[in-house]
Length: 235
Image 1 (cartoon, rainbow, N blue to C red):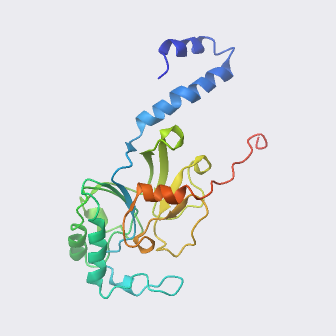
Image 2 (image 1 turned 90 degrees about the vertical axis):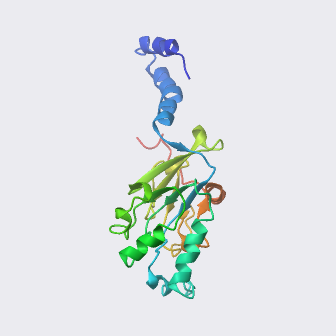
Image 3 (image 1 turned 90 degrees about the horizontal axis):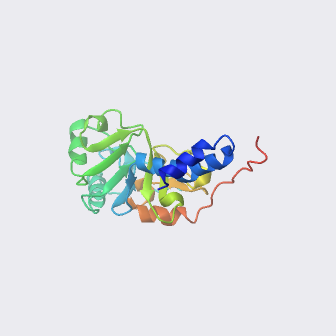
């Protein structure tokens, strides 16, 4: 961290060296302050998932755009058990970010299914089917419509990786040109794989499994960054 007296000396002469002072603030003060204000998660035991649709019998009839069934299970019970067992395959103290559409159908049955998930730290990004059942549970650390997650990562600029979490896919998201990633759900694998650093975290296109931070990273780093506009031209 920078010395207070070094900063003070810059403040005293900033009328003559405005540009130098602003650069100093941008390089040392703002990154440190930004890092202190946000919650930064560790990579270990960090997972993502979306679109469980527990208790939603109609999911067995839905098809992928290629004509195959999205969920070729023999019964709704098998579908529910598979998803629940897969979510319970991660450590109970994991941090699991669930990007919406948790459960549908009979309220009592849906709540019983959700209660079978053992993870103790589930963060819910609200989906279009979460207005009734999911909102009434105390299962979640918090419920939000949108969240910018920061993950400690020495390979990322500033030492942490930002990920924009939203139920719906976004074409252009916050700080995208600076390397921020985006995870979404809602599409059930029916959206063509984007070229930019985002993808569908839903169970229907990830083997009905939660995906770890490292898996997300491996998929993101081979995707291209968006074009950076020339700031000299845009005035």
